[in-house]
Image 1 (tube, rainbow, N blue to C red):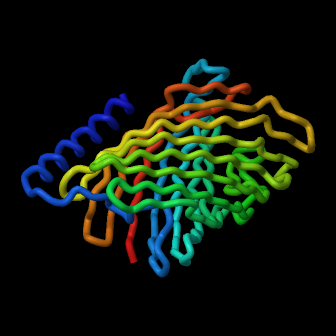
Image 2 (image 1 turned 45 degrees about the horizontal axis):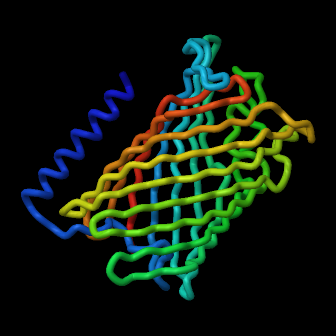
Image 3 (image 1 turned 135 degrees about the vertical axis):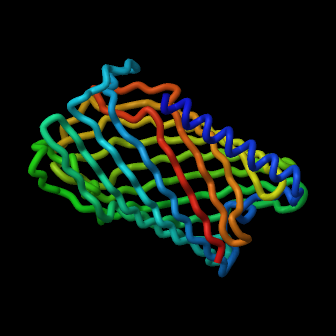
Length: 298
């Protein structure tokens, strides 16, 4: 029922925006800058909020029964400050704030605060801006263990239930390709993340490989619609050097709607559903995720 409601809301909003665009007319163009690297001196501020709730257990690709005695809710707000440095470079600082809520039949507890921050260094490998533009860029990021860890709870004895950070450093490489054909934009991304150290409780994340295949259609009046396939493969983690059987493989489908509030303020609304997932271990996972993004051009 929740999935149907989410899709209905997005379809209704999309139809309203398309009808408005057809009545008023307007230029068909991206809501943000073209390309993958910010020009020298240009700065944008991005606010991206994610919401999900975990109420079902999964083992392998099978969904277990809904657990009435345990559920987890997360609201994550990522504030991103990005600036162009020139010579095909830009830099981005991501400051995440997280609200975690864990509920069980025997009680409820929550935590709120700063999570692990990230610094991104981005370099444009190639860009062609004439006719149908395209761009290729490489990204390198470092995760800093700034989130609160070893959080004690008066309700839950399980370690890490309310932790906001990993307690470990990690780095990630990413390669992005963006290509426009008239009013259409295709985007491809590949990422590889490696934990550099052990975090809390001797835990070290497994390597992660992720990918995105995205298509965006620009409509009139700065309206856009988007659909994406996203994938992630996570290797087994280690605890005090001992390999755990907790790897996973997932594929998700995302639909989104974008538009402009003012000439300097844009938004994106999207919802993501899992279409394939496999977990080596019995794991509590969400059935959908909601995203709200605001972008200020400075």
